[in-house]
Length: 556
Image 1 (tube, rainbow, N blue to C red):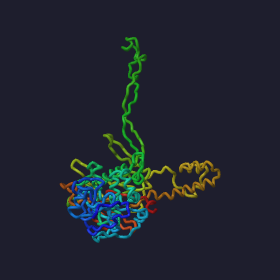
Image 2: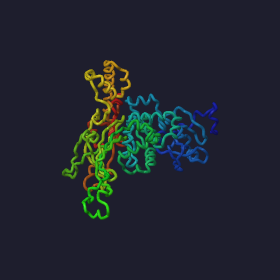
Image 3: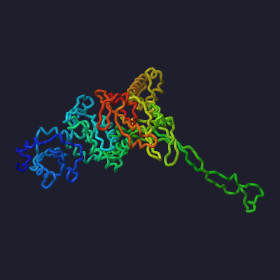
C-alpha cells in the first residue's frame, strides 16, 4: 500500500481492503480515552477497530503506528473527530459500512429525534442480541458508585435537561465549540446522556468511566470510586457544579437554574442583646445637708450620669432565598424494637412532613451557636421540584438511618397550600359583578393591571377585564400540581442497623424508579439491573430523593 495521497483530490481512498478485519464485538467506547501504552491523554487518541485498544498518535514511532506494524491491525478511528484512518499507510477511510461505529462512538440527535423520544415504543438490540429500551439502560457500578448511577438515571428523565444535552452535541462543529465553552464535567454529562438515549449501541448497558473520572476531579475526590456518599449531597454538588460549568453564576441563569431553582421566604426569630441608655439620676443623694453640700454643690447641680444596660429582645427578619432542592426533616424513628432486635418501621404521609413549609410552623435551628426559630414559606415553585428526605444523621458513633416509610401520591401532588401568592384569590363571575368600581380597580391593581384600568370608565368594561384576569389565573392552578418523575431510594441489608452492626450508609445501596411516558410503565433500575415494577410499590420503598414535574409541563 502506497503512502496517503492528497485527500482533496478526486483520487481519494474510499475503500480499504482491511475492513473485514474490524471486530465490532470487542469495541467499547465507554472507557477513558487514554493511550494503553503511555497512559497519555489528549486530542489525538486513536482506537484500534481490530482489538479495541487505544493508542496515541499516528505518525512514525507513535504507539498507534507501532501497533499497526507489529500486530497487523490496520483500521483505526480518531476518538474525538470520529475519522477513520488506515495505518501505517496513513490515509482516511470513507465507507458507509462504518457508520454504525461512528454512531456508537458519538451518538447524534436531530431536533426531530429528540421530539420523538417520549413517544418511542421500539426496543433496540445490541450486538449480542440483547434488547433494551433507549433511555432506560443500566449503568455499571464501578465500586460504590451506585449513588451516582441513581442520580444520573433520575436526571436523564428531566425532559428539558435531557433535550439540552442531546441537542448541543448534534453537529461536530458545535461539539468542538462546546469544548471551550463548557466545563469537562458538563461535557462528560452530555456524552453520558447521549449514550443512554442512543438506539445504536453495541451493548445494552453503559460504563460511566469518564463521568466518574470527571466527578472525582471536579470534586477533589470528595466523590470517588470506592467511597460511598449520600445521594442528596452529591445531587446538590453536581447541580451547582453543572450550573457553573454551563456558564451560570449567582446573577446569570443557566439551564440548571431555569429548571430546578425555586424561591422560598424565610423568617428568622432569635434573641439579641440590645444596649439601652439608662438615666441613673434617681440614685443621686439629693437630701439637704448631705455631704455633697460641703463641696459647694448639690445633687441637683450634679451632671446626670448615663449608663448602658443590656436587654434581651426578640428580633424577626424575613428574606427570600433560592433553592435547588428542599430538605424535609424526618420524624423521629420509633424507639421500640421487634423480637429480633429490629426497629418497628412506621409510615408517615408526605404532607405531614411538608408542614415545615406551611408558612405558619416555626422549627428550631442553631446557627453559629445561636438558637433560632425559622419559618418557611414557598414563594415560587420550579418546573422540576427535588425533595430530599433527610434519613441520615451523624452521631459520635457513626451514621444513623431513619427507616420511616413516607407515603406520597405518584400523580397530582398538590402544593397550593404551601405557596404564598401575592395575588388575590380567584373570584367567580358572579362575585365580580357584585363588586363596586373601586373594588374592581383594586382587584386589577393586585394583579398588575392598574395601567389598563386607568383608561376604563364604564363598570361593564372593568367587569370584563376582571373576568379575563380571573380566568387566566384559574388556568394556572396546575402550576402548583406535580407528577412524580423519579424516585431514588436507599436500601440497607437486613442485618445493618441493628445493635453492634455496621454503618447503614456505607453498607447500603441506591436504586431508582423512573417512568416510561409512552407506555406509562414504571421501571426499577439498580446499576445494571432494569426490571418493570408497579407504581403501588414505589410508595413502599425508603424514598430518599424525589423529583416531581410540574403538571402543566407534563400535559404540554
